[in-house]
Image (cartoon, rainbow, N blue to C red; front, side):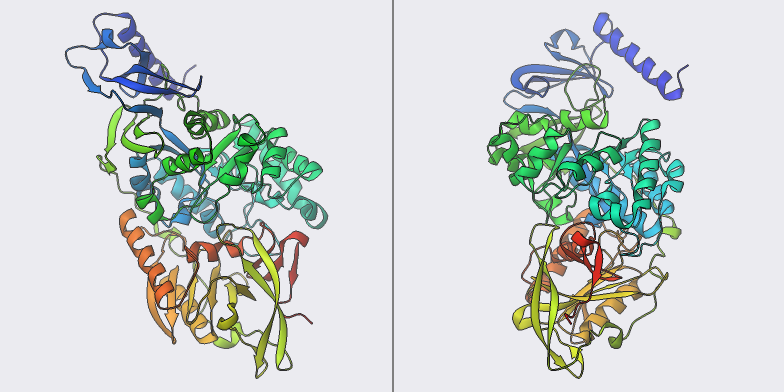
Length: 604
């Protein structure tokens, strides 16, 4: 028997048939004489699209469906594409609520978002994921969640606010709008997980098999995996998976040959599409399992550059046919996720349509969502409902203030040879370096002249009070420090600075705010942004306001502190990602990701 939703859809479909078969019913809307982008056959041709309610009636000649009350929009010369899908992203990385992210992304043609609340899951566990699932229910666009199966990703190497395991799957996989398990980072470093924490694999397999048994998807996460390690990772996901951590052509070729859906990442600071797409443009591989995704985008990029239309534009610039590039944000992800009601322009599908005036520049002129015009000329035309986050997701910072002595790295003698993380711009991969630093009164000193600075990660949930300390090269700071409660993926407080006084002041201000970003110089706070929701998101500002505020923070970091890397707060946050090679920092210390161990910052 049909459930209530099934009964509703049956009634809607019968109404569509009545319009098509009877001369007494008409379309509500006809998009007339547009250039339809057919992502099924990879061609473009002139046709009409007739719409009834939220569904497409017909793609072709719709003149017979035009009645006295039908709205007809002449789109001759314009291109009509299915609404775009971002297949892997994190709202938390934008520091925006779902509502505010939607406000910025809908006008550029994105009608479906598949988000991984991995960040808020690490910080708050099920209560954070549930709140996000509830907000996904109130926005007009399609928002689906793929939830974490494990937090933290590397037990023993980092501390999360909540430890998610298979015991939580029955609950969180059945929250509204949840379609599966997100990136399986706990088995990214396959060989070392197998050798050091095999119990993690057992638990993950229990979670993925349960998810598959109830018809859910499982995403993978397999950076630099080949051969048997990649095969083991694929099997752990249940045999069908994606990977958004592919960074080379060779990896992309290997994964496509093994049946992996490659999510070619192109976000604000991690840009891997140009390398991955070479598997298609140079090796001639079939692109049906190639999907474009952002992973992490900042509000300013969303507002000024666009969203998936911008990523499609970059893909076209790499030599990909425009229709093929559009397939990577429409039919390809819809097929992977089993979203049968969208991703193509065809009868019975959701009337989510992007009207494009220029294919090369991917200029989105208008957006229809469920048959309704919702954006025009980059402006949102509809009001978005307000979701109020509960107070229990706003109390995630539970650690006490620190002192300068808590951050000291000590050594004997006048010079110390130290291990140093190398920041690699536009990647979440990092390098490993050795540097020589001055020791003053037994304390190893940062050296801005060499661009070798102290980096700190502080456990913020009140579970153990641990502090990881190391050094980093690549930020270019000349003075001051900045700290934030956004540090992938456990989201402890991470900070980088030229001296202990400013590091301490920045960290303590983040603690005082209950989460956020703080910039300090000469011991004083010079700029801040509160992030009360899980220490990750602001519900106090709109999307454009967050964009403006982050731009101001970055300007201060550059002009007053001398920071030379763009999007510095996102770059800093990824230096805590303990599943991504090579060296990272967690609350437990300097992590050798490839060898699954904690290193001393000072070389003996």
